[in-house]
Length: 155
Image (tube, rainbow, N blue to C red):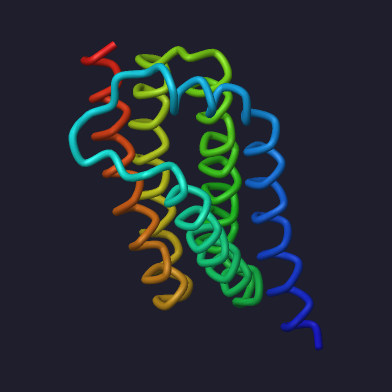
């Protein structure tokens, strides 16, 4: 029962944080959708909440697996890196959509990418599947970096 609760709490917490930030930055998202020049390959707006819901679920499952693994130095570092990258993940929305500071958002995203790479390394030292579940996330962040940089250049 503890395992199920850990998975549910982890997934629901990450999803709730993502949903809350999405609601708080909704106005900026609407401005972005209507007024900002976007780079080629920009997907339709409806894709973003779908993709993030899936990615947040994978993040939640991954961190739950780490939390449930045995106590170790690697586990502690993995959880700290997870928390740090999640804070940056959520802050990016405020920087990009809320403040519309596109270059600052890009720099923050590059830092976040580095943290996620480190997180995946420490996840792998603790639980290989938890690390593998983060591969779609890092791929999406790379695509997001392309989109963010495109917005910087075009605006």
